[in-house]
Length: 208
Image (cartoon, rainbow, N blue to C red; front, side):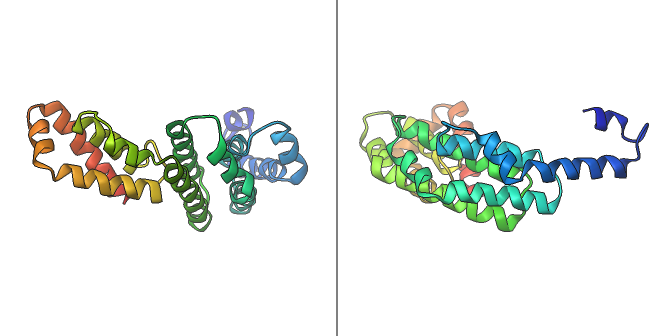
């Protein structure tokens, strides 16, 4: 904060950027990362902490180093094992994975680093949903069709499940429901619901 406030007044902007870059280089060294992560965190908590770290470093090489740390945690078996065996409910686990996936997208990593990370998180989310049979259970539930549709579209758009196999399955079921005449008739009775569902359909289409 002090360096930022001084930029352009007390210090040349180039010097401030160099100071940030040097600080960032220190933040992605093994000693610092190991100390930063500490002990007792789950693999997901470590990944979330590393996303925050990646957001707070600058410079292509430092971003790449942060991405390597992330890939190590997300790619290791404990990350998937915890996602599959956690005491949290499947919807909670899927929502957490979706949030992590979105975090990876916004922390400024290079596209070639973002893509495999997001794919891996999506694959883990797909396994969580498949083992819990969450979408199948929803389809069989006695809930109103529009409620089911809304739930499916939130999964499909990456809001409550990571983009990948789980979102793809949800999108397929959602599109099937949208084509049913009974669902269309139910939506027609409520313009607000119709508008909300339309927005979710558009988000799901963009995420596809």
